[in-house]
Length: 288
Ligand code: GUN
Image 1 (spheres, rainbow, N blue to C red):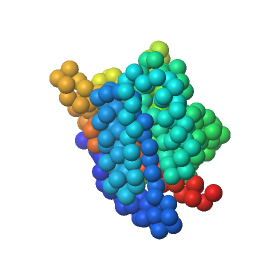
Image 2 (cartoon, rainbow, N blue to C red; image 1 turned 120 degrees about the vertical axis):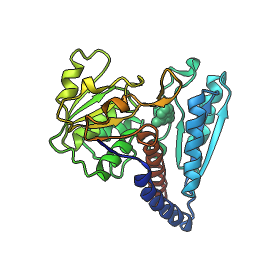
Image 3 (cartoon, rainbow, N blue to C red; image 1 turned 120 degrees about the horizontal axis):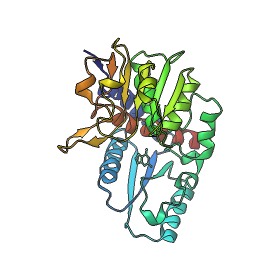
């Protein structure tokens, strides 16, 4: 039976730390403040942003969700973003994705100033990953940062390990591949056109599933030794409408060494990482 690596015990320790750092910042006259721009009523985005706000408030930070109508004009949206970008009392800022179709050509990651970029999407922050930074004090994309925190707490070293990252998104697959490479893993970034996917996954010590397809990875993708580590980044619903990941957890539970659950795994750590990024951003801005 695999070890199930849950987020809760890991996050509790970090939450306590963040709350302490937040109260120290307040003593120095800085109330860490996050602004989230949410456009429309996309149901998962409404839930995610609500959870992010709840988390920030639980560590003593301020968080406001600025709601804009689904059909907001490009001009109004950009003006809202610029106002928050300029406001010195705002330390962290992001736009919840996906954007509605009429705004999807806008690269919002580049419009948030790099020092407030708690998503870690700005070119200046992503470049640090390209350059080999391990990101301990940087604004890293939240899901990759959360995955690394979980592996560290589980005592998993990446040095010399082979990793299959399945998915090449800008939010998860690409930055996570770079980050793991910076920790001396040998990473194969796979995607929907990878022709020998099972061969790659079977030969990998760690498999990260970030493809957005319910229960896509099953025991057929694993080798028989039962020694692999499986990281499930997916948040999907199965055919019965039940929340599930990209890994068929029931099918693989006796065939791997360690697995992150869904729910209660990487998703929760993503929000914790956002909290860490907010405190880093506020600390950096106070020191300036
Ligand atoms: N939508 C889903 N995940 C994310 C994320 O990490 N950041 C933003 N801004 N939007 C998202």
